[in-house]
Length: 133
Image (tube, rainbow, N blue to C red):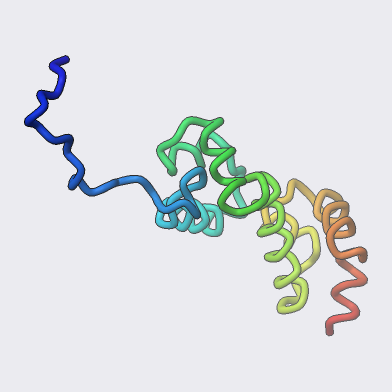
């Protein structure tokens, strides 16, 4: 590599392409939005971390770390919260059986939904539905 001569000046007017500090180690807003939209539209399916990383065009480890930095929780926890919110909304707005709601929200069965619902909302899905009618 050639050294700079004393008459040459370093290039200082090249625009920086570094991301703003608020998301430097996280996901860029448009990538985060794309991942969140994918999650929301596929909640009833099995969501694999590998697929989310592919959507973000990052390695698995880098995606998981950047997602947590951007959102505040790991991807699995984020998906779980979205599923619980969907189940909560369906419990209050429909008369569908709880087992159907569990499947529609992406849980493997009714007991899987009930266990996580109780941990998050401190009440069972049945009790929640009764109190919000």
